[in-house]
Image 1 (cartoon, rainbow, N blue to C red):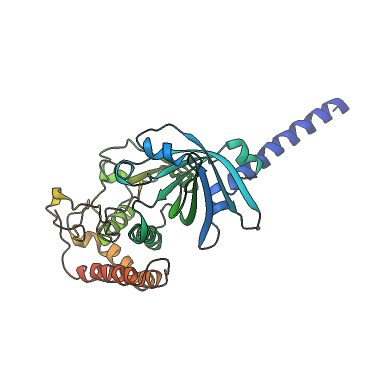
Image 2 (cartoon, one colour):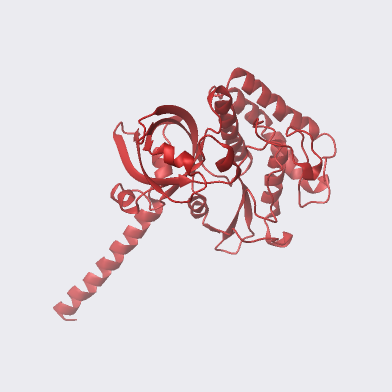
Length: 337
């Protein structure tokens, strides 16, 4: 082999190796969500034209914003981002709509982070004590889901200082930072399927479907549908494994007990605290193992709620009582439509 050919072969090898290493680095890089999920909660400042945002809640147009926070190394981080309103019901009725945050991929790459450039922010829907209580209870719902299911969206509490760049007004509020659904899907080696309506039962991972359904029953939520893929994310796996359903959006549940939530008239419910089991099963015998799983997590659930001091003592007591009433209901055949 000539010297020239040897150098060419070596160069090709090194190029391929560097690309492989680069790809591995990107695949394992920390996401912006993980970078911001510091401690029990993150203190963050958000600067944007809040007046415009509130006036144009129905718009999907992004507007410029800046967020700043102190990272895990004690360094002040300042990011220029874009944000917009998102959601449906809460977008219409909340004083501050839920937000979608969009980061610059180039900025993420420079910071050594993955290119997942979107986050969701669940904002306080109503002002004051009541709004904080609702938000904390919804945060707890996500944490309870993570206790019983290996498939859930990551969430983190944030305490936000809002600065309106238009009128210089200042306000504060709690929020829930949530990873983007596409990031979640990537984390599980899957892809989202938002238009997979009326998926047949034999194409679904029924063990996980039963967990999702019993969880929704536990928190008293009927604002979802597997067949319509509503307030559920479907994960389809590259290896051909059966699809998994991941619940989200729990503010209409009895567990959260939001003042603006309405009972589901389709099932003749008169209170959002009432439970009805929406399921793809015919009888309770089909979910015996699922009920046993939840029973095994009962003490952990209660301890999680009792230890969550961001929720008031009255709120914690009510949440524990509501969860205990779920376990009492398991002793009888579950109420079905």
